[in-house]
Length: 112
Image 1 (spheres, helix red, strand yellow):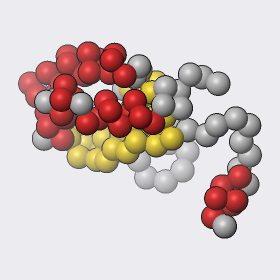
Image 2 (image 1 turned 90 degrees about the horizontal axis):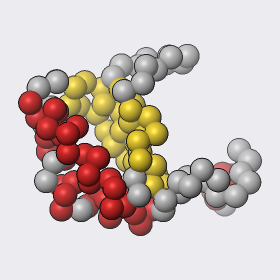
Image 3 (image 1 turned 60 degrees about the vertical axis):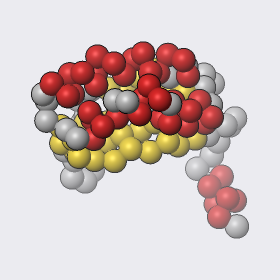
């Protein structure tokens, strides 16, 4: 196991780099630390192998879903999230990772 059970994932389709984004980037790391959050993908070049793509992908790992939710709703993060959303378009989700050995067909059992 990689130590992460939950992830914050964002696809930023467009970003206007200006003072707001610079401030957001300067402050986000401090908001992650209390919840064990760590950037796993951030600013890396994407090699598009299927479908249309533009923008940037961000993946932040957290030890558990509670930590991811607590980080996103924390006062510290809520004070800066508008700096990002006001300067970018895209989406963000919190998602749990798989546990233990996982096979692709395991998702079918969850459907029944």
